[in-house]
Image 1 (spheres, helix red, strand yellow):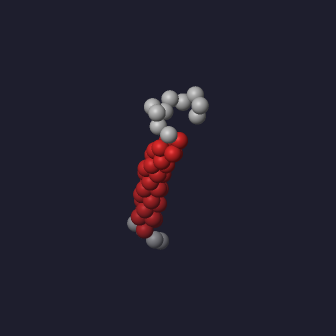
Image 2: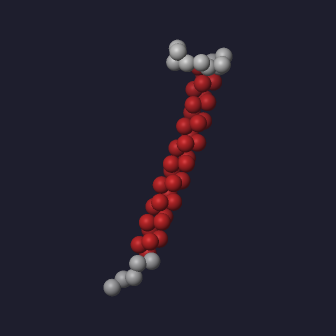
Image 3: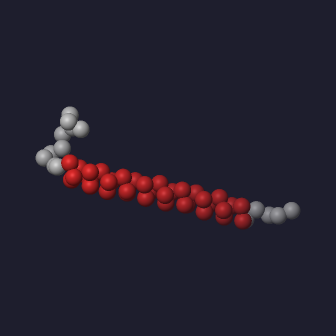
Amino acid sequence: MKWSYTAGMRSTQLSESLNAKLKRCLKIVVEKRYEQAKAIYNSREKLQRL
């Protein structure tokens, strides 16, 4: 981090900012996985049974 431009922010501010961004990204991943699992479940339920 010593070669990074931080605009005068302290390490705790940088950590909190990174944590917030990471949480947003992980939330999107979880939502996409849920939608994918739901789609797989729905497609299996709609298959005709022989």
